[in-house]
Every structure is written in C-alpha cells, then in structure tokens.
Length: 303
Image 1 (cartoon, rainbow, N blue to C red):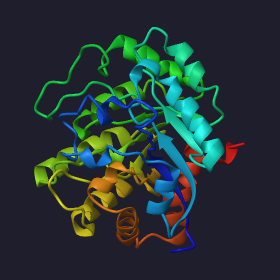
Image 2 (image 1 turned 90 degrees about the vertical axis):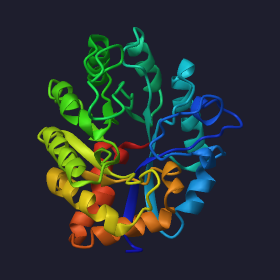
Image 3 (image 1 turned 90 degrees about the horizontal axis):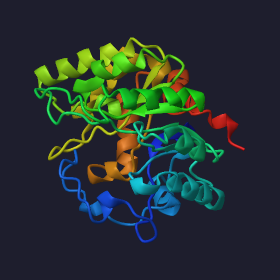
Image 4 (image 1 turned 180 degrees about the vertical axis):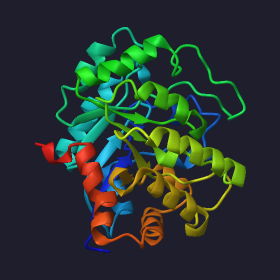
C-alpha cells in the first residue's frame, strides 16, 4: 500500500514556546480521555509530523484547532496560514470560535480571511458519563445562543467538526438535522470508550441515530483508550461497524497526531487501520483514505 495517496483528515500542530495553549501549559485538563498527557507538552511542528508519517504518501493534511488561547481564537488560523506558507502543510484549517459568542459572525469572518479555512470545531458542554443528565446551560447543545451560532456557519460556507462522547450523538443529531446546508463530520469514530457489550450497543445505537443524516460523515480515528493497549483486534469491531453504519462514501481516515502518539506510533496506527480495512476494494480504500476527505474539506481548492 506504499502507493496509496493519503489525506490525513485530522491532526494538530503547536509551538508551545511561541504560542499559548492553556491545556499544554498552565491549565491541565483533568478529564483527558487518554489519561496522562504530559508527553504532549512539547513543540510539534511540520518537521515532527513528517518524521512521524515517513514512509507513507501523505498528500494533504487537515489541521483541527488545538485549543489555542480562547481569548484570541482567530490568531491560531493566522499562525497556521503562515506555517503552511513556510512548510507546505497543513492544506486546510478547522478553527475554533465559541458559537454562543455575540461576536460569532465577526470571528467567523476573521477565520475566513485565510484561504485555508474550511470549518469550525467548537466542543459543546457535555456530561462526563452516559448516566448523567445532559447539560442544558450555556454552550450546551440545547443552548439557544449556541444553536444560533451553529446556524451562522452556513452563512460563511463552513463545515462543522462534531466532537462529543457517543452518548450525546442523538442529541446532536436533533440540532444538526435542522441545518442540512452545514456539512458535518463526527470526530474520532464517535468515541467508543466503553468496549463492553452494553457500551458498544449504546455506541452503535447512537451512531445510527446521527448517521441517518446523509450530510454527516465520520472520521475513523482516535481509538485510544485510557490504560488499554491499542491493538488491531481490540479495535477491529468498532472500525468495521462504523464503516457499515455510515458507508464507505462517508468515512475518512485521520491520525489525530500527536495526541494519538500517547497510545501508538503513526506507522503502527495507519498499518493497523489498513489491516482492519483489508477487505475493501482499491476504490473503496481510496475513498476512505483520500477521496472523501478531499471532497468534504474541498482540498482541491487550495491555491
């Protein structure tokens, strides 16, 4: 598969020596889903990414917001645009703006000054466990201000990267179905964190609830679990079920590097996905690893 052209639909870069990322410096994330992430508190730039991805034909990459200082969210997009000009990646940017911000329109316009801007990821407030009641306050999926900000994405021609625990997928679908004009991609295989039969049944049901919306895609990415090794056999089921639920035409592979490096190396992860998906035809593999992300993020439009 060394000749397979690959689009990495989700990765991060950061320069903690130059820029401010609270979660990587002075505001630790107490509920980080992979546990101790101290190994990530280092500079990670295009040369580091290319070293990790060596040996594969990575032809395009999509950078997803890395929780840059929320006091100046557009600055991350400006910095990444400079990085891309100097280093040749990323090829597209998914930025951040608080969707309940009264100035959301102005900030979206600021992001869109970059020719690489394609979408927004703004994580709504969610519950920590599936047995907790869904939050209904500010920045939750039920917040009217959040929903107004979500609707604004369409006016700027932007897609939305959805990142929530799987138990919020049906709730998210109820919002998303009101706006078929906004392309959506679900991050990280819907986070199948509970691999018990009951946990996987819940994940499967929730994935079906959102996959019924034909403009929603899914990233086959970030299968890492806290205190559990990344193996092909432990992840085969969720990848193949996600593929079955969404269909080949709505799935795209993504590395989520460097966070995924806490559990597995780039080569081992990508080769693991290729092993799991070995039953696909060559055109189907090209769809998952290249064509779908190219179309969704309009990568052919890069000037």
